[in-house]
Image (cartoon, rainbow, N blue to C red):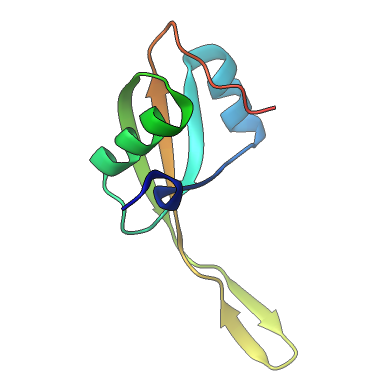
Length: 92
């Protein structure tokens, strides 16, 4: 799988911003079929940084009520990537 198919987009929340500034942790939404090794290689290739560790989470789909019934959003996979102390990613 190519790198730009593995990493979909960075996730910017209050909690991830604190992780970026204090602990060199960056959050990304990734492909559900991607493994930790593929995520590590993709982030290193796209951003030219050294990745120390990768943690992943699969988010459950949320049920939403619409006028024609209940619909489930698709489940997504989130990766938290820890970088080497000397590296950083400029997202803005």
